[in-house]
Image 1 (cartoon, rainbow, N blue to C red):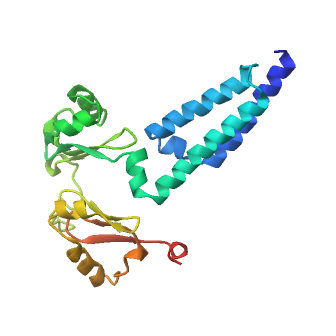
Image 2: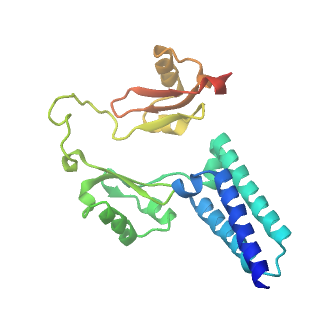
Length: 232
């Protein structure tokens, strides 16, 4: 490969990669799931081959990049449209510490051991498991932690500026993408009839107009309606 051919390939690779990453948006960086990570590596590998591998024609290299990007975009659309598909492609958050106890089976399912878990906790300035009420391993690979109230910094609520009367330790998702999540209702000791009564009391009886709803720790229901354009 001569110098002019190399320069042309590098320039072409740069321009195609720049355009395709703009089309894909920011999720590849801000929401780096395992699939996003593998997809980014694959796109980078194809681009590198397009730039320096003389055995790969420019047409085939650009076609491969476009097709891989298209597949990634299709997977992203499927994830947005279907909660069931998200469970398959992205997985679900996993509770690894519950009420101060390590959930060993859940920890094993994440391919983590206790030493790795403690490392993630130390990165959040938590040096003993006694401080942790809940820890959730997110699909992005990050650990979300909720400390016991006695270990949390003082807030206005602690000074009795706002009264607190929490029933549940965590907010619990009960409607997602307009669909009821019965297993989460069961965890709260509730059923769909209870949920419908709560919706009616809030003048939100039409389930199709609700995008997301969760039961807050104080037992009240938070609702996020769908955009008007989506419901029309």
